[in-house]
Image (cartoon, rainbow, N blue to C red; front, side, top):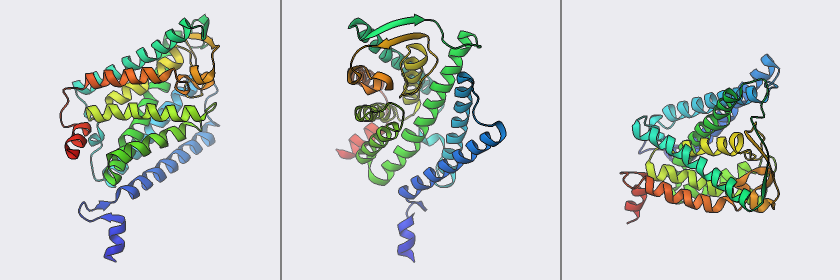
Length: 303
């Protein structure tokens, strides 16, 4: 009996082993999402038809779902605090959030300018494409729906709960590798995905992990994720992982998809590789004075 219990429970920590914790998290996330989507369909007849309203509603739902699941599982199954995932609310964290957001804006801006300079992108129109909502309000709503909501939720789930539990179960190196692969594969379910997009999304997954490794908090990665989605879609007019958004700059791509990213977005083209490398350098320099981070813990443990 004790052997069977040891299979499920880490007796030294008096809690479920990491693999079972992750399994329960995934089951809970699926069940809550299914229930909420079912309620919306029955009560409201489905998501709103207006694209902007729909993205805001979806953002609210995703935030509530992921935060609820992570919070409950972290508290009652992991037996740790929500904040311990890397959500300490202080001045440093808010600076990281802003830094990540601005850095992603620069990354997408560089891609846009390079494609435009080499004739791989042609601007068609400048002006907010959304109708029925004032442009500034529309931009802010898309910032929330496609930027902040997704940045918070995906980072909380992937670089927060899943990565950190994988680390406890199989060690840092394999946790990073598996997390990146899983992230790439899941994004291959999006419209217009390719094998190359899956590989490059996995690389971008490491970029987000790097933010947590170097700072010990999720804010830098969350800011980068929110900024990447927002500037890529609503501002510079690219597809966001294969999905459409209202845009400020309407353009067409004329180059090969494996270079520009085509209908999936820049993360499906090799154009993204140098800007990711540049971002890694900037993040490294930004976090040089951080102490007791996962990066340093792993380095000192391996020494």
